[in-house]
Length: 193
Image (cartoon, rainbow, N blue to C red):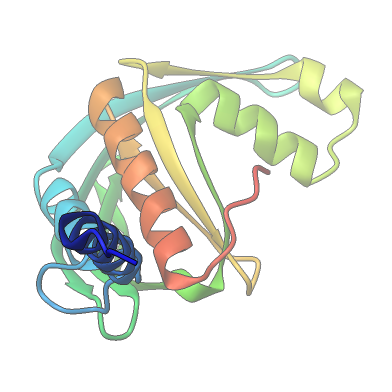
């Protein structure tokens, strides 16, 4: 019986390439070329690139009247830590010329329950729903942001929520997607809320 060597060699190559393809499908570790490292570097860059933003919040309350509040916010010193699946940054906020927040924030991506991105108006509605505000309360209280604002909200297991404000919708959407990807890569949850 004659054995066709070239056919056997082709078959062996096919098996070898299949095995090689399976090996490359193994998820990358947290080395410098991993998707997690790249995603966290993007988040770090985006957070450090926000800069100081200024906006006005107009509140109309049918019972208490109208109010306008001037805000300045800044996020800086963002540091991504792939080994611990964390993002740390400094958050500063001024309201009517008084500093109301000046704190370091740390988000453990493994503890995240959900990431949400949308307009500040949509976010306000979600807050009302979560706090179980009555329909009457929601109808007497209106908020308008000037300029229109966008929020990336990251909700953690401790029921804390970090809302990151943007004036640029594309940047907000990009950061929201990156946060969602990082949460998935770190084993957190990304449920809509």
